[in-house]
Image (cartoon, rainbow, N blue to C red; front, side):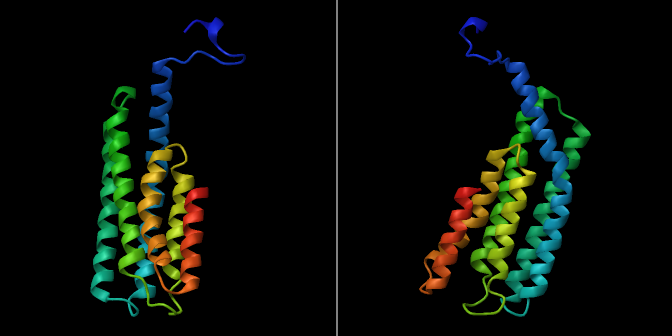
Length: 187
């Protein structure tokens, strides 16, 4: 593009430069994720500890095992990425693999918000939505350079719980569902 057609202060973009920026954003996501994976496993274990006497223990244990496997799998992907050390031209496949892992993790968190919810009025009822919003908030920061990955994590994490609450006959649950949706729209 001739520079005479650029608006004031704009610089010409090159495809190579854009690919380099994308490669660095993907690399940043891979570098920031390991600690988040450990914390996700810790949080899942804490949730199991809080809810194991409140909800179906077999379902909760299955969920915990699934979350551990998902996060260990994502860590394996990070280790493979480090081993391969992909260049700019290999970024796309690693980006999509990362986003697939994020989506699967979001689905795991979302399952908690529907299948393992404490009964209405139980003192631990707010543990689940609070944890899910916290997971989405952490994702907002750790996935800041890859907004599509954040969306792939946040939607399956929060939408099922928001709709679960919105469909509830209890007005206070409807309000909470609305607030979860509002958070999702704002974030």
